Length: 394
Image (cartoon, rainbow, N blue to C red; front, side):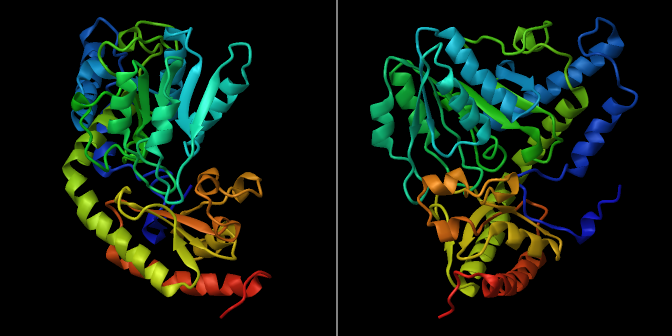
């Protein structure tokens, strides 16, 4: 299979990222000659186990944790499910979960399923968001109760990049003796995180969102937090997650975390400037376009823009002609005529929600790529609007 990366302008990094060359190099020995089982007693396996522990320390350093608080998983979804289901089992008398209406499907669908599981009478409070994607903290404080087993709020929204005040929310949960989990899949590696100073009990992250391979994730479990394993089995991961470790990917994730720490300043300066250039250029050059989400408190790499009276799927197909990769806020590609649940929760008008495009950049994007997108997008939107029965040019 031939994937000519040099011809692709990739602005879909919130979906997945390129595996960094340095990460590939770190992984290769563990896909070839260093194939021992990290749990083996012999030295050949023990050396592999040492590599896993080094990666554990690298992950911990990036998020301000202790290496003993890091459990490797297969992905962010597994980490999310493990955190929530652990809390419910650790406190079976508590049947209440607090989350938001704009969570990733990994949380959204799990909570919907639990809410339907009437045999245990689980009750789910889904916090509403404002038009700019921010949360009403008064409503959150009101929702907390002695019946709440866990709060699960994403650190940053995957569609809009809006950052939630998880530090404050975790502190409020702590006051009520409620466990707090954050899906930080989009935030880790893009903004500074220091869990040693926060009241967060669980944090999920995923390797493929920070230039590590797919198929590896982490669940941070704060020291002293009650915990019940999701995958029971062997003694791996201090008994917190059974199954032989995915060594090569774990080593890759460790190296990616070190790179992320080194590139954090660039992420928040050069990448942010590219994002702003793209965003401001599109809003200025395309009539009837709008930014989805608050302008200030967002991830430095993400912008979500709606182009009224056109379909996101059609926009992406036209962009694909120029090898420009992004994502649509519309769920049409999944067989639904409904727009994104995030944009619906924000009250984005129907005529705009269907035409939303998320651009998510990385350290590998360039100014020339942004300029190319700014050149191609206005005629794409103009062409599609000419075909739209709803479009009326001024």
